[in-house]
Image 1 (cartoon, rainbow, N blue to C red):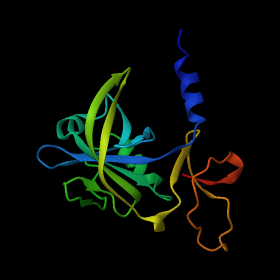
Image 2 (spheres, rainbow, N blue to C red; image 1 turned 180 degrees about the horizontal axis):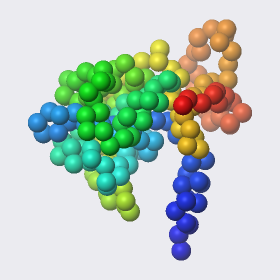
Image 3 (cartoon, rainbow, N blue to C red; image 1 turned 60 degrees about the vertical axis):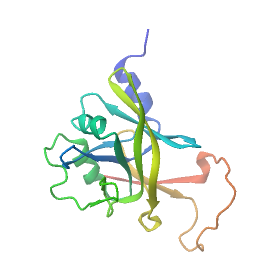
Image 4 (cartoon, one colour; image 1 turned 45 degrees about the horizontal axis):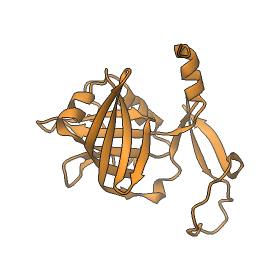
Length: 190
């Protein structure tokens, strides 16, 4: 017997997640988008990501039809934008600054600290969501927009490495796993 719905939500809310806005266009070029915390890398070779989308999402039809999308990883201070893209608003792009990528996908250039342009490889329906497995074909990073916006226990916040602002720019080091003591959770956005 599965866990009760509310208990499941409480458990999953205890896992801090980055926040992304997935964007695409309809066949006639109308931009569509949704906010999600359900994004993860799948493979480096080939570069692949997984995005989970609610079957009731009004953006899903465009995602399925176009079979390509952009994942815009959102920076600090953009919680209102995320709430807009999580809403049922008819025209989420009406007052949002964006540019079309070379492939025509909407990029939230003022608000994304990184983005990945993706082509859907596979779809898998699980319960009330569809999992889109996608090949990352292009992307970029804007490190000046750090830190990233995070979602934890139903609130917005940010985290940054636990180093002092007066320290020099960090240098690239080999990958290593870190514990929670190495990260600092700062404030919350409302």
